[in-house]
Length: 376
Image (cartoon, rainbow, N blue to C red; front, side, top):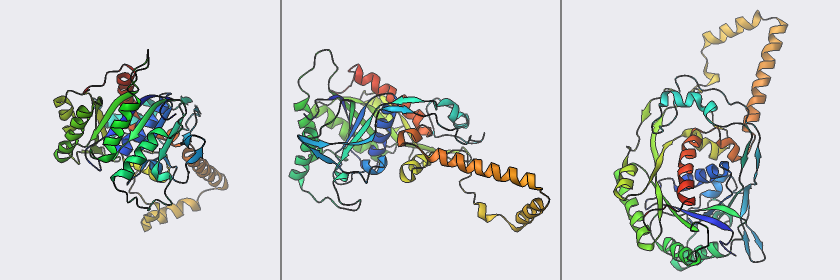
């Protein structure tokens, strides 16, 4: 069965480690799901599988069925409930850089710019070697032949349901896993299906802006051309950071390297993805992103004068005012609790990067479904 139920296969590649391929894969999958597509993620980074942790499914286990493995369902196709309004950012807060957008005002209108009303989403599935390991710290110490066999088994023995997109998260480089992946995919998808775009849609190449990363990622573009895999475009990850409190932008790793490389290789530049601390909080702690709050503020560090003033104020409050205050505090806690409830895809709608990936995903869908990958 293998890939028979998959319409479009997209590889996420990079010749450099640490550029955020798994993060890009996860957000692309969530964004495709929010666009109503059914999506699967195949994680073939055998020695460093990150997808289970990013999706919050580390406790799930792959089940065996007649004919192969069943992928883990991250969430089914469903109608997401309306999101409770998140705390509004203040006027001085900025979101990470988006091309052609004034970051001094974008985040302030974040809640208005993203559709937070009931929304139909496509199902999301995933499979990874990390779901077969005893624990997160278990090491995979395999030689090339065993890695090759594992990659081929993932491509042939997984019983995927009907999927619009299968995203394949890969390790860095152009080694055994990549060669095995390319050979197997080209063999299985070489027979064209009438009235349908090619099943192997192409690759999304991920880089960071600095020259040392771009230099290594160029090799991945050359690899795609040598093996006959089309390139959908380049994503520049970690492209700038905008402080959530002051709005000042800092280019931690420079900027523009991915766009220059895309022009040189005559492929699409899909967009620049900035660093967003709230995205890390979402996948690490499961907390819905919040902007405009003073992250350095500690309610327990008020000075003595403030404490004395508070005591004086409380002494003159009557019973009715006390009751109102307690009611407001209770409503605030209830709102906070409601904001933390929900699926990953639901909480992602409150992330500033969701807007960035809406644009990237729209381009990918257009390129894939019209068969316009370059580099083959």
